[in-house]
Image 1 (cartoon, protein in one colour):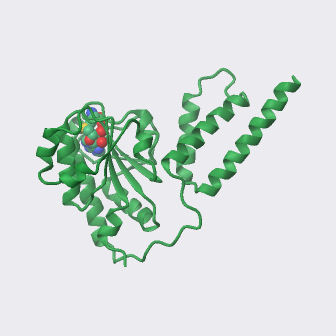
Image 2 (cartoon, rainbow, N blue to C red):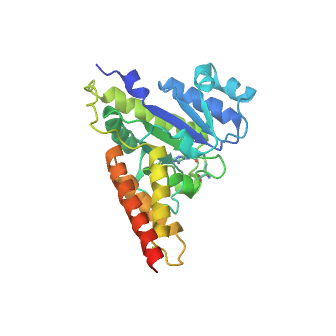
Image 3 (cartoon, rainbow, N blue to C red):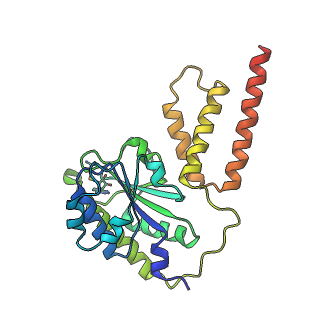
Length: 253
Ligand code: SAH
């Protein structure tokens, strides 16, 4: 039987470039009250720190086990679905969900055995477009337009609460069916995008134009496809052949 606490273990809260250690502590407390334990910190300005421990108010286990990473992708390793929380609509054209809609969607994913990441940005600047581009959807807490930004740990609390309510409302779900192929995780997707970008260069797809916009569109397209590992291997194979043909063609020129 799958319990709420089993399901909770499939989630991680990823805090990106957090400025104030107190917010890390408050976020740990917010997570812990809703039954979540896994925190990943990406380039925190100060951590570990006394202020973080003080504001965690006993959620020390969350802080003690928090991973610290240099880049976002490292914090997402093993997760196949990431949601970026943002107060503002950004240039990245991602599907936008409320926390409640997001909770329903990711609950379905964890029931299939997938790991899910909730990604939160820096207190002042939020998530950069580049960071949102690594997410499958954007979650916006429907605050008022002229004062839309919540304190970081309060945004964590709202999201954690909605996830918990969604999980408690489930009739104890059946154990997730075994995947015949595991879903691609964030690190595999990153290698895929690197190979895709290199292949597009090799076949001279860009013809002098800047690749940035097209790469963001391709990211969006392939993130939406929720590929598994076998599908990734097939596409890597196609790219490798295209690269080989491009090399041959160049030799003949
Ligand atoms: N000025 C920044 C606000 C940063 S607040 C911005 O425009 O994004 C710090 C983090 O808390 C944000 O990056 C986001 O992850 C979360 N957050 C704050 N308010 C939010 C809201 N209304 N909806 C979703 N996330 C929010």
